[in-house]
Image 1 (tube, each protein chain N blue to C red):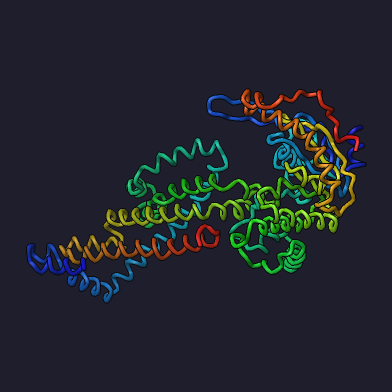
Image 2 (image 1 turned 30 degrees about the horizontal axis):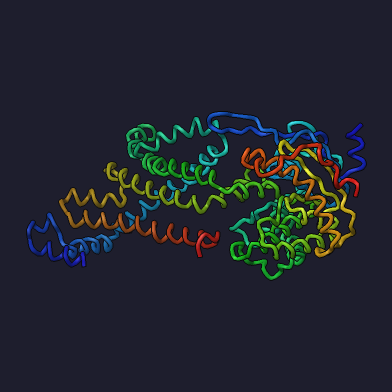
Length: 240
Length: 293
């Protein structure tokens, strides 16, 4: 229905069609990009960065979160620093990263990692603190210690709450990546479609790019994290 | 000298063990004495019930023995070796079943063995054996949240037994269950104890439960906890719940424990409570009511 209104509005010609394209134009633009491979290459590039950057964020975030949940000293030093850094949009690290790591993939990766790692760390810490003490006691009584204890008991006991943090981390990483790709005019990726559209004054292409970004974000949110969350909650007996 | 004696003659020895906690109430930090120095010896295969008013440190006693807490003073010996941290020869069963919700019943039961690197085939055998012991064989692949409260607690007992501990510690394991389930589990526990010959320390605030299960009952004083009296229960196992002897015995113990419960009530409820009830005067009634039996 909304699509219909959009088509109708654009057919009224209140504004020239190059400024306000209808859904048909946007769809045509999408199909063109799909046909010449731009779309696939862009998605693959961006998702590649996401998968590597986000994976590193998970490992780092879990480690930092665990350390600050278990050690008061760590929490009061590194933990409070992280709390402060969390307020800084991670794309602000880009200029620094460009100088430190050079004009390459690394500097984009840094922005993605820093976008997700702190929120994952904070979520991990709170999830571990909220674990019912009984699981920790049982784990210790049964003989779990050190790394095995963290892996077998803490991780799984924290998982239902943790998954929410991982989801937020993904969203932050995705936003950071888009911002970084937009600023870096020299790299390809999904956000590059917007830049190209702007350079050619092709608003249909820009809208198509925005739709791609939105759809990827929604798909991962609902399909991947939504399903995972439901499965975990059901297995844990938190919902039928 | 005392330690020598301990190592030779008893399964478990508490030697002048005391414990205090730091209570942090935002405004003030104070030290609460949970246990005054106490000594207790338990022989192999004995079933000991520990009973006392709430907050008397009876759970602390088990946590110390399980190695979850460290005593301030004194030592705890098991087979002559000082307890230093948790160990698979001393397994604690809690009031909540505490089954890992992400593991199936079978995985819960075998987890302790998995940690010790026992091969899967052997673990599988043990899981079968101990699930059968608690009559839950057909639930091996079930997830904990699909079980009733009583079934969960039986799995948690199977999980503890599966490690074949020398000492089984139980902290009010049946108090969250309904009366019928509790009765069934009392019978099962009595049978399992006779089958396995495990030494059991069982914390409860239910006198009849203690009289039904225990060889000896340790009565603790109101906080700070110490041992008020140790009562031998002179009836042979297996016992019958309905027996009049047990009822009579419970009644005698009840009076003794009431004194300690009254102290706690007086402290918590203050004057209001004192007006309605005659305040207990320590020493007025014989402190050793049950001792002669």
